[in-house]
Structures are given as structure tokens and as C-alpha cells.
Length: 205
View (cartoon, rainbow, N blue to C red):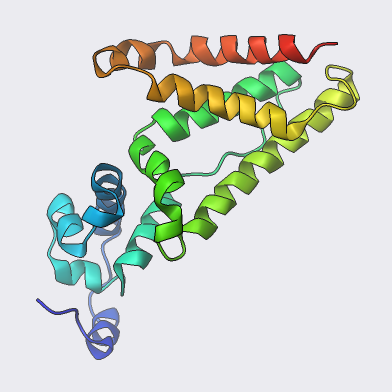
């Protein structure tokens, strides 16, 4: 089936309103297909099958598969945000939990694929850069507050802190054997607290 023309899309936009539930299902399906199959296996056909809709429903909403993937990732692979809890330990634990949700949550496969395949997909490198910048911005704010409170040395490195925290989370998730995934999921809160405790211990003079 060929993609509907611009005239068809314009005509459809004046007819029955789009169903937000269908939009949500398609976006979720796009993220799931990309996570499972990568860009090489990503197609409008595969997303339509996963979402249980016809290809025409997708083409009425997205003109290209690149735009479909980018919008799906934007909706379901959220950037981390700054969380001012009142203490450095609380801030870093909140950051670690957001990273855990990003790399071990429902969209974990897509988030990991993004890091590997971004250069091959038009527009995705910019999306990955947005995620990285959000992480750096949140970590920088936390470090500055920690320095003001006297919890961190004045020369503390935001880059080193974020690399250690993010790297620890990703390594923990990727090194987990499949048969232990449930146990690791159940212990992620404890893991984040232990990781932050180790990190803070290593930053003290």
C-alpha cells in the first residue's frame, strides 16, 4: 500500500478527529520495535503490526518513519531533570533513579539502542545530544549545590561524577544475566543508594 498523498492527509485532518489512544499505541509500538529490532528492522509495516493498526493510520500522522521514531522516542524516552531534595545524597539518588528508569524501565532497549545507532538515523543524534545535555545540566546543578553546602570539594568534576553515576547504572543493567533480571529489578532502589554512597565516599578529601 502506498503512503497517502499530501492531499489525502489534508482531507483527513478536516474529517473525524484523531484518536489520542491510537496515537499513543503507535508511539509505544515504534519505541518497542526500535528497541527490539534496531533501525535495520524498523519499518512502518512492523510498527503497524505491533500497534494493531493499518499502515494508513500511521501515514496520516507521520510522513516518514524517521519522524515516527523521533516522536515516539521523544514521548517515551524522557530526559532526566534536576531534583533539589535538600541534600546532595538525596539529589544524586534521585538522579540515579531517573537513570535507572531510563535504562532499566519499559523503554530500556530503545534507550540503549539510541546510544549505539544514533549516528545512522537522521535527527536521532540531536535527540541523544538533548538527553546528554539534560543529564549534564541536572548533574551540574546538583554539584553546585553540593559545593555551596560544603558537601563536595570546590574542584569537584561534574563530568567525572556523571560518568561514574551513569556508567555504574548502565554497567549494572547490561551485566545482569537474563535469569536474574527480576531480582535485579527488585533491588534497584538499594543499588542506587549503594552507588551514591560509594560515589560520595570517593569524593571526600
